Image (cartoon, rainbow, N blue to C red):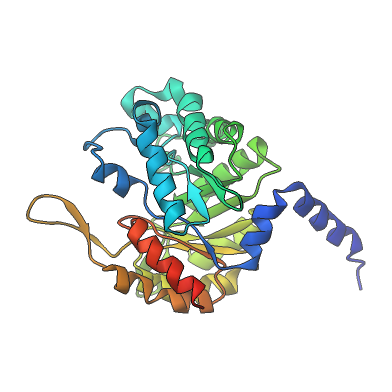
Length: 312
């Protein structure tokens, strides 16, 4: 049989280089992330078409208040207000030259309210345009943008990097590579967003959920999973599929149901707090180490989720 000792030592060395406290908690399980940032910003006056990341400069106390509210609700991990901080996406607002400033401030603000035993992860969302041949982006341009974003988040003091809501495995892998360059000593989590179809769960680009996670593990992600698009009930169906696909820690963050517009023209979500929390039992029993919320979830959702986890 082939001697596996060199391989084991290599893996152990890689683990030792990482933020061991955060990774240890992630591997132990029952780690609670926060809920939606955008939902909370809208509640506080974010206008349609306004760049959320500018609030890191214009209204830092409000962003800080949102992070604090999630920590107080029971979150052990909060996510920076930098989801749209890639230069390609910021270019739509004429802010492509302020990538470092906006992302650094996002990290700094969140870290200011981080207490003992709590963590902050830097959020990196999709660039907003497709890679060639489906869109205009070259991989080199995409990677450089993610590198600038991740580097600023690392400089701001985050405990890890979260590449999230990825609808294309190719873009997710580019972002992972950029994060590895920018913060090789920090844990990197990559979560995809999947659609439920009669044939199973697939990305917008038609990539099978299990295939995505297998590839992400192969390319060196420290944890993986899914967020957005799906309700918690649908995530409960997806959880065992993902668990079978990877040995890495899993993070699942469902939406609070499906979005709709009420009579006042305001965005509302279909799942009540009780409806959202109930399927989380199946998700955790499937072997998922970390949970939280995505679009439509608030500190109230996280508070009840925290009570559920602590009663386990």
